[in-house]
Length: 126
Image (cartoon, rainbow, N blue to C red; front, side):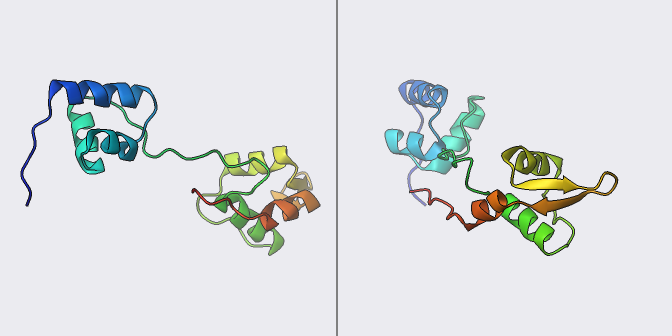
């Protein structure tokens, strides 16, 4: 086990500033030359909220994993898998990827736009 390096007040202030700026634990750890886990622990001690990970926003025309499995379930006449809830369904209706069929049962049909959204490649995080 390596030597424990105490946090300085300057490092604490830098952590606070970077967290306020929306940096994640990895970005803060690089700036402070500390491990991401050390940064997360220190942030907890200081009651500083840091974001879990900085994700680039996915283009709205590209289906998420949950949207893909929901569209697959609709196309295969299977029930929705766990995690696909009303907000996922509402989002897909709003995007025009699925339409409700009938008035009583929760039946949906995948539109051509929905099929195209699933065919699009999910962008990599790089």
